[in-house]
Amino acid sequence: MNGLNPLPGRESAAPALTESTNVRMQTTAGDVVIEVYPQAAPNAAQRFVELVQSGFFDDTPISRVVPGFVAQFGVNWRDPHKAWKDKNFNDDPTIFALERGTLAFAKAGPNTNSTQVFINYAENNRLADPRYNFTVFGKVVEGMDVVDALLEGAAIARVELRRIG
Image (cartoon, rainbow, N blue to C red; front, side):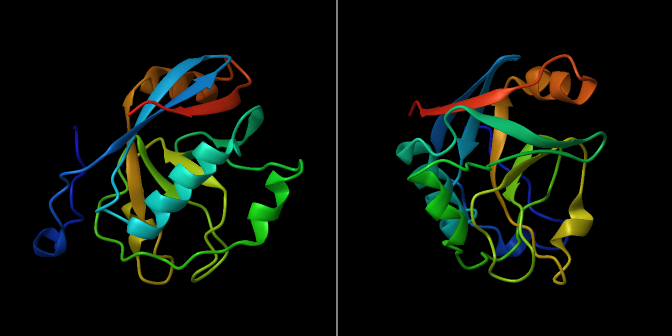
């Protein structure tokens, strides 16, 4: 387990990360392995794993790439998956750094997390500010070069996520 780094000043609040679930994200650009840490953000980790298990992400596009910022996915317009969009879940406390390769849910305000997830291309700790409260729940542990290829426009990825551990 690779783990996450606490936000500066939040070290004493960071729980030990003793559990993880591995998820393989298969794209047309190659595979990415993500470790999901339930102790880092229980609500977000649970939702992400539920979405993976339901097949929500299967054959969906990377919907947004902002160079130097994030790659985002998690839009599914097909039944029965489109109903997930309206199933918001509560924010977790923001404890871990939004570093390169970490994942968090995109949202429109407090407690509006739903299905869209982003992978950070760079350190984005400003998103941890209480006004935003984006919470890291996982990290790319293999295949960040594939995520970078999305940035470079080398591939238009379609995502198929499978739980591998």
